[in-house]
Structure formats: C-alpha cells, structure tokens
Amino acid sequence: MNPLESYLGDDTLRRAAFPACRDRIFFAHAAVAPITQAALEAMEAFNLASATGELDYGEVFLKRMDRIRGSAARLFGGAPDEFALLGPTSLGLSLVANGLDWSPGDEIITYLDDYPANVYPWKQLERLGVKIVYLEPAETGAITPELVRAAITPRTKLLALASCHFLTGYRLDIAAIGAIAREHGILFCLDAIQTAGAFPTPVEEVDFLSADSHKWMLGPSSAGVVYVAKARQEMLRPSLYGAWNVVSPNFIARDEIIFEPGARRYEPGVLNASGLLGMEASIDLLTGIGIDRIAARLLGLKAHLCEGLDRLGLRIVGPREGAAASGITSCTDSDRPDRIGHLYHTLHQAGVAASFRHDRAGRPHLRFSPHFYNTHDEVDRVLAVMDGAGT
Image (cartoon, rainbow, N blue to C red):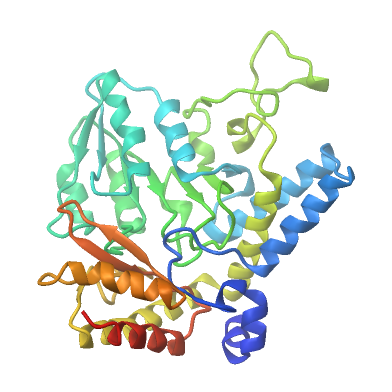
C-alpha cells in the first residue's frame, strides 16, 4: 500500500504524522505551512545534540548536508551538486539577480502581480539600466507560453517567473516556457515555492530555481534550496562570500578567491542545519509518496471544494481543473466584499486556517490551500462552517 493510502485510511496514523490536523483544519499551506512530525523529530534530534555539544561540524556535517542535496535532487531532478541549501526564496532569486552580468538595455521578463519576492530582485536592477518588461495576462496569474513568446525581444536576457500564482493558483507550463527560452537563448529563473512538494517542478527546463520549504514542502522557514544548473555555475557569480564557499585550507584565508565546487559556491557560511534536516525529512516523506500522486490528490480536493463554494454563491478565481490548476483555490464575493472578511474570521474562530488576501484592485479574497493529508470530510466541515456563518 502506498503511504498516501495508508495516511488517508488510518486517521490515527494521519494525525501522528501531521500534527496540524490533530486539533484544527489547516487549509493554508500556500502561506506558512505546519511541519511534519518527521521534520519535528529530525530538528529536535539535531538541537539536542547541539545542546549537549555532541555535534561534529567537520566532514560528518558536510556529508549530512550533501545527503540533503540528494533529497532535493530526488524532488526536483538535476544533480545533487546543483543545489545550494539556502532559504528564503527571495535570497536565491536575489543571488541570481546580483550574480549575473548586466548591460544597459538588457531586458528581464517578469510579472508585477507575482508575489513581491519575485518582483523586487529584478526591479532593483533598473539602477543598472536593465529594462523590466511586465507581462500583462488577461486574467491575474494566467501566464501562458504564448504571452511569454510575444514579449521576447532581441534584448531579452532572462525570464523570471513563478511556477504558480500565489492568489489565483494559475500553474506555469514550465516545460513549454523552458523550451521557448532555449529556442531564443534566454535564461530562465523560477520561483518554485508554490509548487515544490505539491506538483512536479522539474529543473531540467530551467537555469535557476529558488524555493523555501515552509509551504508545500512542509518544512520550516528559512530552510530551502537554490538550484543553479551546472552549465550556469561559472556564469552566475557568487555575491556572498565567506569561509565556506571560498577555499580556505584549515580556515586560513588566501590571497586569491577560488570557490568550492558545485552549488556550494553560493553558501558563504554555516548553514541552517536544524531547518535543513527538517526540510529533508519532509521532502523524503513527500517523494516517498510520489509527487504525481500528491498532485492528483490536491486536484481532487480542489474539485470537491469548488463545488461547495459554488453552492455558497462565491466566485472562484483561477482555473478549477486541467494543466493550469493547482492546490490553491481563492474565492471572492463581487456583490458583498465585506462577506469575505466575515467568513475568514468565522473560520478562524472555528479552528480553520485559511488565508485572507487582496488583489491589486483591493478586492478581498479567501484563499484555501489544503495539502494531500487533508480529507474530503474536512472540506465538508469547512463548507458547513461557512454556510452557517450568516452575512
């Protein structure tokens, strides 16, 4: 029996593995998600060893970190030495923005209505004469290959896109857009935090990727991965320097800078080991289930949730099904926007974790993002709370 079936078939096992479902219904994994029991135990073991002075920060530590790179490679593809163990997501995106050579007139294609972590690292390059080209989809978050292709010019150097829109849940066609980038000789950087751990997010089609583990990967905050394709590691200059990424025999500085091999060159100092071990434990749980199975489960929960939101007269934004759909389901009420805040507070008081978000026009939205371990019964209970909320 696959672990997914085991968790869903045995509520005692489910509650033991996912502490968040013991006393509440957690439908906010697109925000800051709860960690798994496996992650908690891995972090506690490390912290206990740290407290008793038993840690070895020499070769043993480095081997443990390399093991985590292997877990990242199983989740995303690629080779272990293409992953730097750094979070948050904005740090990795900033390393890409600050590590490439830019010339006045170079163009970056991105999207102003993405989460700000994937806007400001590129926006700040305008001081170097870089032109930021914002995509303008017909619907918020609906970035299509055709839209990207139409925005490319001979000056385009980089595509900087998110794998999934944080509000509307539109999921990017990574393979198709990656093919367009290769066709035009353009670099492709992916903010992957809203799909990593929930939907396949292959690095084979991208040059750079960054994702913290605190959402769908079910890991702690500020533990994440930065992917830099081996073919781009000489191109992407490290913009952080320290004793860990510059070769320093016996921790003696030398009068030359030679970087450590692979993506370690982007890790300047001691890593967030406790958090990374927690991330590893959750990644191994997810890959043990299979990301394809998790993705199918999320779309099934989404369909059930959408049916109930329709009955409540709420307007769902973003795709409900198909290749562009994700685990994010947001809804609003065009006639009674104040109803959304009321529903959010009612859910919160009932022990339901959801998210309250606004679009650029200021319209409030209620965002749901259950994970695979959530159940159809929990969806029904959430809908019942909303149905009884009144207006």
